[in-house]
Image (tube, rainbow, N blue to C red; front, side, top):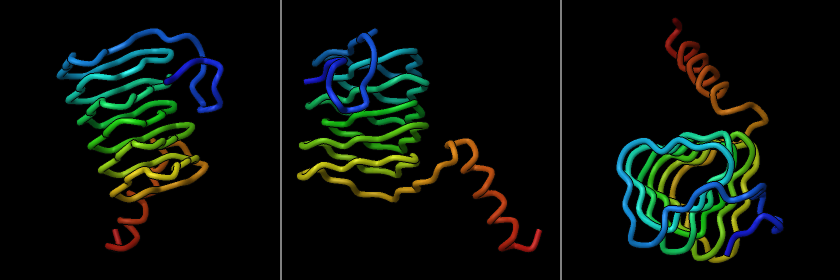
Length: 136
């Protein structure tokens, strides 16, 4: 489904695979491109690309460079570069990214913040807005 020559934003050689039937709980950290086809529960941290394949279930807070979702993600996605949702993908949770692509047939239930600022900058902006509203 995914390879390094497609136009999905996935770049580079595949560095790792969590296959069907595998479950990982805790914090997953990686560089490069990793494909998930199993179940992840916890947190994902990477500056690389996460490929969430059909049939996968990711229940996590995700902070990555880019992500392509064709499976199911439940949790917050913060992507520095882009988020691409492909059918039959399903995302239940919020997305923070400068670029969002949603294909036909995808289910997305949540909120999205799109800005040219990186995800860490958004937290500072949100704090400034909250302070202004409370008069602090």
